[in-house]
Length: 135
Image 1: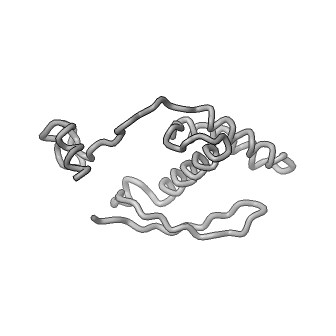
Image 2: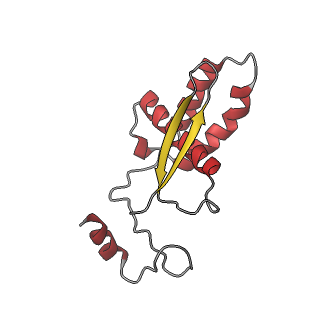
């Protein structure tokens, strides 16, 4: 399996700066830039933290809802003099409200049925492809 490795620095006021290494199967840097992927990683990290905060499984939270919530709170968290601890706690609570229903066996083969793209065409039924993925 081919993977693309990215490294980026994380700086957050009040914390030591750190470096994160991210491995992804998105290989084309023109389609998904390092900055875009680091933002998605940040949103995922916030989702996991919100799940721990609300004692919910991370897979039961909406990724899109988390991204929208983080983007909404970003302006307020950046303000000087803002009560960041309170805002952070409120943001995590808001992320945790975006729950999705039970989604058993939620995985899909990375194949497209009709549209051209970088994945092979889906030429067999999804159930057969899912069985092949689990084998």
